Image 1 (cartoon, rainbow, N blue to C red):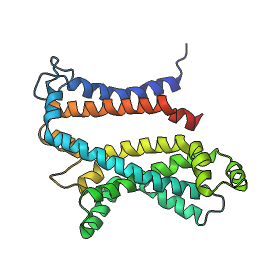
Image 2 (image 1 turned 135 degrees about the vertical axis):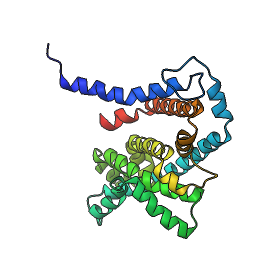
Image 3 (image 1 turned 30 degrees about the horizontal axis):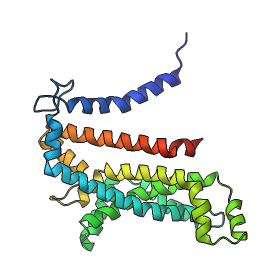
Image 4 (image 1 turned 45 degrees about the horizontal axis):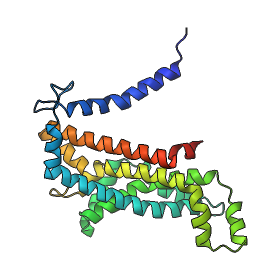
Length: 259
């Protein structure tokens, strides 16, 4: 019986994604004072240590607030940009599309270095600078996902509502937004994950005393590779998977976008 290549490649891809997660989860339960896999024994002490660690929890709080703020701003700006770009007669449509999607084509390190030079002059090496930098990174994901949702929509529905007397706001709120909701939610999910897990830009823009969680974990792995780092990463992984499952169960984001 001939083995199909596509299922084999699919299983290899799944393994590449899942095996590192399993190793991190396993290493967080080890009884040793250094990260090892398979774990030597079983203990939950490192989770207690991670929760009691002010640097880790401070980084978690900073990452969460920056990610939420950047997603909120990106959703507003990205949805408006996608609605404009979806119009057939949009002025400079091609140029604006390239502009909004440009951050996807530029290496993150180059973007971070350019932002560092600019933000140093503008005194934005702080929380506000982090939010602005993350908006630049997350905006393309919102624009792209909303454009995907708009591509399959019939714009005659909006025109019919306008002809019947609906105001532009009512047309958007009652017709357009429900139609593009899967794209908005999917883009917001990706944007949150990109912002929350970003390292290159956060390293350049954050201050030594106030760093996002990925930066704290990166520094700990360089100088102090305790299992508490794996425990913090495990908590983040579990929380992320849980939120994504809830969103998919509640809104059917990905099935709605790609069916």
